[in-house]
Image 1 (cartoon, rainbow, N blue to C red):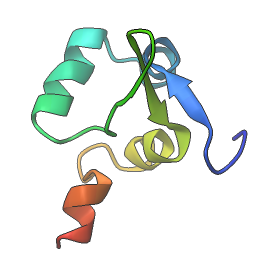
Image 2 (image 1 turned 90 degrees about the vertical axis):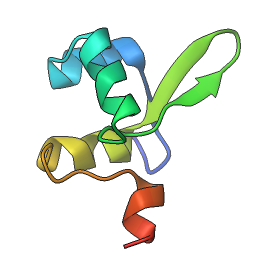
Image 3 (image 1 turned 45 degrees about the vertical axis):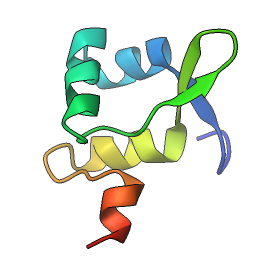
Image 4 (image 1 turned 180 degrees about the vertical axis):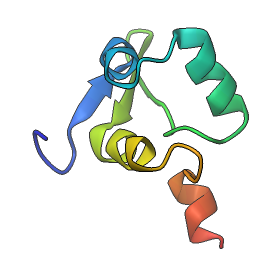
Length: 70
């Protein structure tokens, strides 16, 4: 881990998780994957800490906004 606010690109997340881009997009639509952060120009990144949280429990993962409402 690089630091508390480290960001990972979509390609890095794909490599780390073994998921395709379409699988990740489906999980985003279902609110079952770390939220994307839009970076200019037309780049997407995710917080490394959230990706690691997802990897620890893929089936039970909830994004921060849904975790906080429970």
